[in-house]
Length: 327
Image (tube, rainbow, N blue to C red):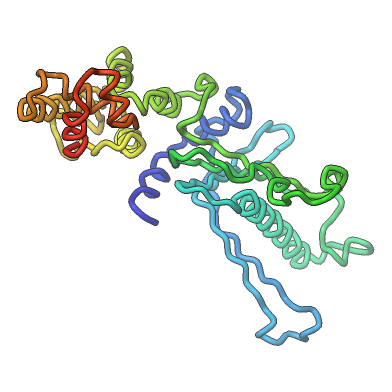
């Protein structure tokens, strides 16, 4: 696991963040999952497939191993003692088979649970008759499992959002769907969350800030308006935000980090000042008015072409190109 993945997992592993993610995505903002009732569960699934005709030869065994990044267990509605295993799989690049992968994760989790039930019945020797073959009693239950993909890539997700999307243009697929598995892909694309009010705490703060990811000036104005929030972020949140907005995390800077808190307001202000200073220096060198180079740089950084910037600002094309070459 690389540095980027560690930052994401470190953030999502916080109980209040994990709970907020599922309360927002699954329960529409209702506070169903409480941070204090989350219990860590082993995320690895290992399942052994055998060839029934091979009479136990070792070369006929196949082991399937899968591992989700974070798995927690909660008890919902204590009267029913309903257990739910909630899993998160973060993904920073588009995987066009993800709809199938998450189905495999969840299926292996159910098979693992069924295997544990079977082993317990064998130990107790408490199954008879029709239940003996499967070692699964009528009253046995499985724990519902949900896997969410936390997508941190900036590229728009264009892969299948359910298993149906992987079938292509198969004839009569609509008629066949009611009789087939077509599991949905539970995907959160962090740069495209529209209803941020469903989420609470730092997760909501991150989703709201990312709306301005392509406009540095608007982002700085937003954090300044919400200074009480963005000047007191914990380290895990600060590191993730720095990662998502392509900003260096303020390592060991006493003026920006006190008592484990990170001040994103000051960090963004420093970045703006550095950009302005750079713009002024380049503008002076190229004969451009003070501050004008910063505007040109901002427009170019938003993806505008030199020609477009030149037309909109009346700055000669050659000077715009000179700024672009040095940005």
